[in-house]
Image (cartoon, rainbow, N blue to C red; front, side, top):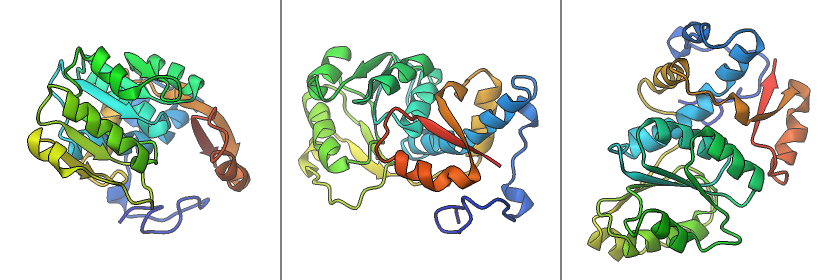
Length: 246
């Protein structure tokens, strides 16, 4: 079960859960203090979504391999930080919003792509010297448009055994070209939420070791402002992460 997915109460003022689901932020007290400790804590869950997608479901990478992340929301931005610390030689983020691209560079991306002005496939192959990426993350929410482009990267690149992880949800059917996965020995896997063993603790440990994601928080709001910002997040792409204060 996941609070906010299969159990109601994601935006409740108080919620009762079993103690085994609680994780202490005490390990972060030496890194953050006061309000910054709360802000860092608010990022553990979304960062765990990226960690689960890339490491648990996607299998991670070997140091020196390349990663492509499509979508610069909180999950995509957290993915940049995780993959850079995992040893990726190139962490490439594709995102149309300029502010999010700059934030991605601050958090760990080595290269960014504006898909509205640049050819995504050409840029990926150019950055990786024709190899392509070992790991692709679809975090944009428009897989019907993104997946065919990623498949071109896999097909035209020299990298075999690539993995495409789909983490953003969409009700729109997505076309899949099976031959790409057969010939290139690639695979596609799905990932939802932070379901997995020990992801919260691993993310907290990464934060303790210096992985600071608090710069992505662009707004702090009160609980009563949640409905308004749920609407704003649909259109205002300058917002990266909105944190709700109790």
